[in-house]
Length: 141
Image (cartoon, rainbow, N blue to C red):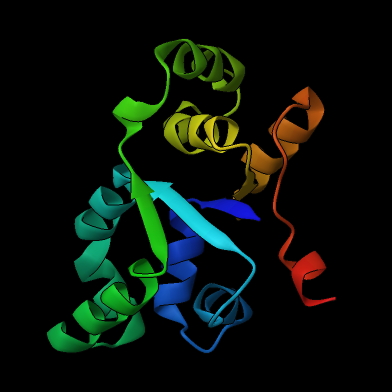
């Protein structure tokens, strides 16, 4: 199964590598294949010091943790998403959360499921249909 991971999921995994979220991402030989856009890496770098502070990591610990989590994710350049799909996704998210356009467009592009902890985004997408959401509880059942 193809799963697009957004920023809040990866932040959760970085902050608690013993969590269910981290264990799902780090499961060896999983049937799940994780994807994201470079926007995720940008967000990690932007908030790296805050993540380090919250987790109580040293510089080397935060770098190692970020590497361990992100090496399980295949990063797709957002420019590879067809512009028509990107535009329709912008329209879809206009009243929900335009900041998640890349993640949602990538989900549609690869015919995957979106994994997000953003309840506003989840609820908005469920009301509009069309985007399959990854439910982590269904993975462990």
